[in-house]
Length: 422
Image (tube, rainbow, N blue to C red; front, side):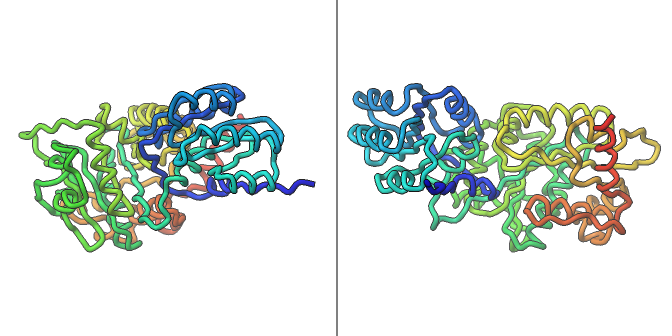
C-alpha cells in the first residue's frame, strides 16, 4: 500500500505569515479547467500584483512544445493526470528544455511518498496532489522566494473610518502606541491624511518632514531616506507624518505609496497605516495590499451603509485574505438615535471585534493633552477595548474584561444566532 505523501503547503496554510511575491514570471500548463481557474484566481491576488502570470492548457507536453522556442519562466507549474512512471518520463523530457534556474511545481493525481521523493531528487521544487486551492499556491511560491536567513517583512495594518469623525485615527494611533509599548515591537505609524492628519497632534509633535517627502521621488526611497524622515517617539515607536496643512498639495501615486510602505515594512515588524476617508485609486490600493484592514464605524445609518460597502468591496478584492476587522466606536452617545450593535452586525455580515462606548471626557482629554487613552486611564472601558483589539491584531487573543465594560460579545453572538434561525 502506498504511503501518503507529505503536504507541506497544507501545513503552511495554518500559519499566519506575511507573504510577498517578487517580480517573477509564473507560467502554468494545466490539464483541467479547475486548476486553470485556481491559477487565474491566484494571478488576481494582491500578493501577485508585481508578478506576471500566464495560464495555458495542455499539461506537460504543451509546455515542452512552447519552451522549445522560448525561455522558461522563473516558476513553472505543470499539471498531469498520469501514473508515477509516466510522470517521470514526461518530466525528463521537460528537463531537456527547462532552464536550470526555473522552479518547477507539479500538480498530480497520485498521492505517493515515493513519487514525491523521486520528484524532489529530480529537482522539482514541489509536488502538490490535486485538488489544490489558491492559498496553497500563494504560500508555496512565497516560500520558494523567502530567505530563511533574512529578517521577516513587517505586517501592515490599515485603519479606515466608514465616514469622517468616527475616530479611526485615534484608534489607529492608540493601537500603534500600545503594540510598541506593551509588546516591545518596533512600530511605525504612517499618516496618509496629507492636509488634515492628526498623528502629529496626538503625539505632540510638529515635525513637517515625513510621508510627503518620500512620495516626491519614490525612486530614491531606501532605508536611509525612510530613517531620516521618521519622527522618533519612543525607543519602539516612530511616526511617518503627513504635512497637516492645506497650503501644500501632495499628489499621491499608488505605486509610489506602495514603494514607500514596502520600504518601511522591511525595517520594522509592525506598520500602522492611517488611511483617511477618501475613496481614490491610492487609498483603494493601500487597503487591498494591507495584511489586515480595520474598519472603524459608529452606530449610525450612513456609517452602516458605508461599512457594508467597504466590507463587500474588500471581500471581492481580497478573496484569499481574512475578512476585515470591524470596530464599533462611540456607542451610547446621549440623545443620538443608534443602530443596535446586533442589528449593525447582522446588516454588514461581520460581528465587531470590539465595541467602544462613547466617553467624551476620556477621549477628549487624551486628544487635548496629546496623550494616549492608556495614559489617561489605563483601567477605563475604552482602554480595555483597545487592548483587546491590539491583542487580536497581533495574535495575542484577549477578551474584554466584563467588569470593565458594559458590553459583552456573548449576548451579541446569541442574538445573531437567534436571528439566523428566523
